[in-house]
Image 1 (cartoon, rainbow, N blue to C red):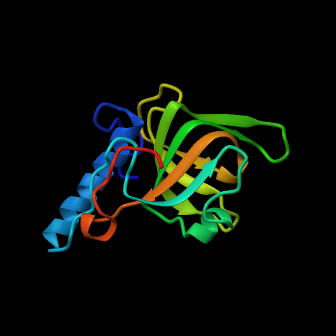
Image 2 (spheres, rainbow, N blue to C red):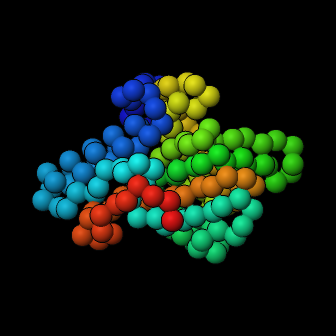
Image 3 (spheres, helix red, strand yellow):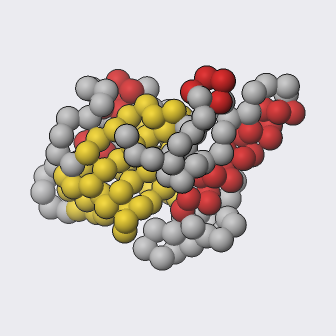
Length: 157
C-alpha cells in the first residue's frame, strides 16, 4: 500500500508480491523470527484456498471459511469472473496474474493491491469476488516459513 501509484521493480504483478514477501522476511529476521519464504514460480507460501472454474472451492464455504486475510496472495490463471447479476465480467491472468490482499469484506469480496493490470505497471487497488469465477483458476497463499510448510515447489497441485 505504501507503493500506491508507483512502479515496483520491473512492474510485473509477481514482483510486487515477491518483493512484499522479501520485506516481511527481512523484518522477521531482524526480530529473530523465522522468515517467510519468497515466491517460487507461482507458489507464494501455504495454499489456503483454491477454486477451479465453476467447481466448489476448497475449503467449502469460500474465502471466509478459509480465513483469507490481509497479506495473503492471490494467484490467478486464465480467470474469468462474471458478476452475479450477469451484467459485467472481468478477467485476471493472461495467462497469470498476482495480487496481494489488503482486506476481506464481510461478504467475501477481496480488496487487493496489484500492478500490471491491463498493461498499467503501477500499484493500484482492485477488488475480486472469487465466488464469481466461472473459468480458469485462483489460488490463495499465506506467507510461511520452511519449518512450518516445508520447501516450496513451483508446481500446481
